[in-house]
Length: 253
Image (cartoon, rainbow, N blue to C red; front, side, top):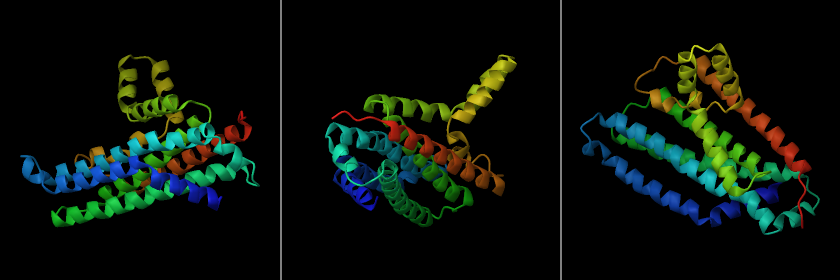
């Protein structure tokens, strides 16, 4: 598993798309420092919203367009046969890929978060617990998306994996709107269907507290504990089904 993790790290480091994202991240760091002077609104709100959104958007793009290709390239370049011919179990292959990719995301998000907090200190902006939890929840969202992408890539094409993952990402952020529409139809079936459907989708909307940092601050500690636990359970379920599908997958030489 360690060798797979190291090979995955090499693939990530060699990927030019990562350096493009990091370059734009640096550009936006510089831009955010001057952002307060470019707006007539509260610069603290603008800077915090801007940073949190950019961290998520950058990694959303990277997970979709880099991670979705990892398994596809292994199959297309026939390296999957060389790997699986060695004394290694298929679940070790999956876990090795996932954990190193996750570690890479964690490390870079951690560094981005440190830079973000430094910017807040320089700008004399209060660092609230909601800002910190928003960073943690962003990591959970990206981890879930990461597993969803790998889950779909075990039986879908690269393009279809990206499209379905994007659809799930946006729908999962829209259940409040969908439930409101269901209530307006005065249909009990529509209301219950929306509630049950929400259980199948990842809890992205509940984890998306960055959108309400400035309008709602009365979050109970149980809210963070529950949603963190729910995210871990959801990840575990996706992991289980990914391993089951990959164990039964046949590769044609």
